[in-house]
Amino acid sequence: MRVEPLKIEGALLLQPKTYGDDRGFFLEMWNRKTFARIGLDVDFVQDNHSRSEKYVLRGMHYQVNGKAQGKLVWVSSGAVFDTVVDLREGSPTFGKWDGRLLTGVCHERLWAPPGCAHGFLVVSDHADFHYKCTDYYSPKDERVLRWNDPETGIHWPIPIGLNPQLAPRDANGPGFSECEKYAAASDLGCGFPARKGSI
Image 1 (cartoon, rainbow, N blue to C red):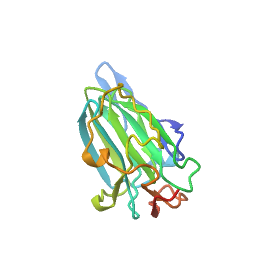
Image 2: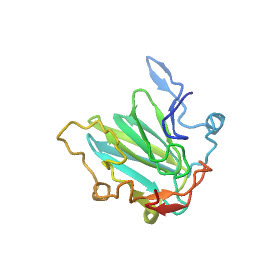
Image 3: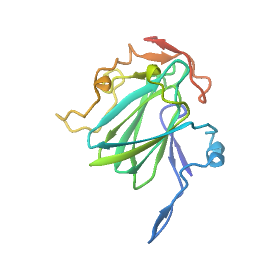
Image 4: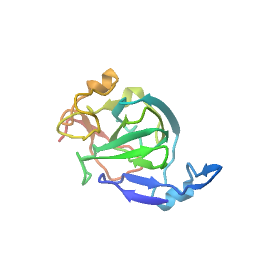
């Protein structure tokens, strides 16, 4: 597996080995030993699958109160622009963002470590998006960072004049200065305590 560190501390772009011929292809979706060798010795407890149409934007989501999720994400059909924002106050990349194109053709995976907000924009006609999570979804602990907050400054590949399709909570989330953040980043394998608006 090819491993490329992203600009966010602990975040990775992964390219698994794919074996193909005129019949199709084969690849390993998940192998604990393989991932442990690259430093991702984590326990996944929940798998999710979403399907979305072009220019649907989901994010930027994260969980607090000890429920921070690490996410291994990929696309099985279509293409998305996937993004991560570092909300860990102790991290050298605190407040930074990075994004990558993930496609069902190239089979890239992106690891978003606990303590980061995560989101994606569909750039194909539709996309099937999958993510393995290190903690269970907890509605009462879920938070949203506003997708177009100028302080974060994510460069979404959206045509000028076009508004993405958003859930109301995503459209109205707080900006970076007001959102809850994580007070420590000493352990990427677990959640961190959160503080509100603590820059």
